[in-house]
Amino acid sequence: MKKQERALYSEEHKKYLKNIKIKKVLILSAQFGILIGILVLWETLTHFMILDPLFFSSPSRLIKTAIDMFATKEIYDHISVTVYECVLGFGISTIVGALIAIGLWWSDYLRRVIDPYLVILNSLPKIALGPVIIVLMGLGIKAIVTMAILICIIITITSVLNGMMSCDPDKILLMKSMGASKFQILYKLLWPYSIPNLISVLKINIGLSWIGTIMGEYLTSRAGLGYLIVYGGQVFKMDLVMTSVFLLCVMAAGMYLLVSLIEKRVYKSR
Amino acid sequence: MKIILCLDRVSHTYHSKLGETLALKDISFCLNDGEFLSIVGPSGCGKTTILSLISGLIKASKGQIVIDGEPVTTTNRDTGYMFQRDHLFEWRTIRQNITLGLEIQKKMTPQNLKMVDELIEKYGLKEFANNYPRSLSGGMRQRVALIRTLATSPKLLLLDEPFSALDFQTRLYVCDDVYNIIKNEKKSAILVTHDISEAISLSDRIIMLTNRPAAIAHEYVLDMQECKTPLERRECKKFGYWFDKIWKDLEKLENNQ
Ligand SMILES: Nc1ncnc2c1ncn2[C@@H]1O[C@H](COP(=O)(O)OP(=O)(O)O)[C@@H](O)[C@H]1O
Ligand SMILES: [Mg+2]
Image (cartoon, rainbow over all chains, first blue to last red; front, side, top):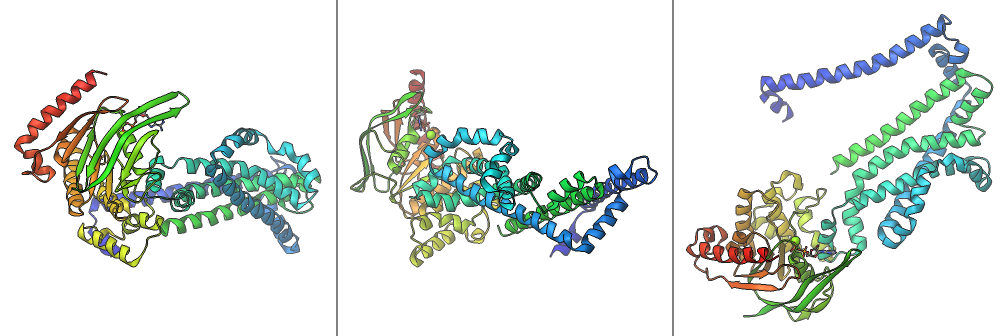
């Protein structure tokens, strides 16, 4: 079917399709070009000691450190601790945040009571609560996850709630005129209506939960990539710092990809 | 003739921070079974309010509304509401959109579903039944919206300017379409519109409301039995007469503002 259609395209349309393809290749090659350019520049500058590799590390040292780290297996513990904290913070804040948003949608009264608190909490730099978190949660994973949750949850609540409130009031009236209960309006209208918004909330939360986790690990930790970065900084091992940052990038990209896959799945099934 | 709906001295006041708005004042009228009534009036006079009251979406401040002998207290299953826009749910197929009301009312019985499939077949939606709304034209979407309203078998249809979001060409055709389906299914209907020619081409009777607070200013019983469908009526001899008369009355009201 598809092939037949393609055969029917006019020359002009084929040209148009080809142009799109060329553009895509151009963009991809530019993206790779920049990456490789930076790596080459970095390597050359440090190789000829224009930049001191002690301060700036270098791609070759980065690779060597990574290989050493993976060889000792210790790195797996650090990675899994950080991923665990991040996934926990991400999961809890997304689910609890969405539930709170539903509660606030449900009760007009509650929403109006809570509103100023949300505004203030939203603009508060959460790191300021660091000492409070440590006193309440103790040193360790609990405190780190709490930090991640604090950073994600407010924005989750407000975006999910705004998403629900943006639904056309006439659609709600339509449901009501058919005799729908509040619960039916929620799961037959607002839930499916909100799915695209929920996916974008997920995407935002991935970034935020990484921020929260690393911030938490800076605050208090004995393991994890954030811990390695802090430790590397203290003992002046920039190779360790850079390698950990690089691993973080890979992990964050991986999680983002996962959500993109979910997104594709959801849109395909509709 | 059986009477299906009566409003008895219905008044309604909206309360908001800015003050109170008396929207309706002592509205009384009745509707016969199978009758098509239009309500026209200056914009903002309270037409939508009347429909909301009849459907039970809001409660009248004063007066009583009775449908088929039962006073209206909350949203009821006797009325089907059709809005200006179709409000089809994009994530549901055409058939799933049509069964929305049955789902809500927990009436997804085999008979009801069979009836839905008959409606879908009869009104030419079968080939789209499993498609999503985005593949339909504006006119088709409004037809689906009407079938969705009919699926719960209401006695009375409430149509709030259901054609005003369509372009002129489509409007004439959808108007004819909706009329034929409503007559075919032998439903009573109240149409709210500010388009006089639309009201004349569809109705047995027209009520004109005054400026806010709305009261009934005029009532016209259209004697146009010889021309049946809206498109025929637009060609009818008497069409011009009624149009002039109603247009002048409305003009007078609007100048009195
Ligand atoms: N929920 C509401 N709260 C306060 N005033 C309202 C509300 N709904 C409608 N009104 C007011 O009541 C009047 C009648 O409204 P409506 O019935 O929608 O008029 P129409 O449909 O004839 O244009 C308008 O002046 C409008 O501003
Ligand atoms: Mg209106």
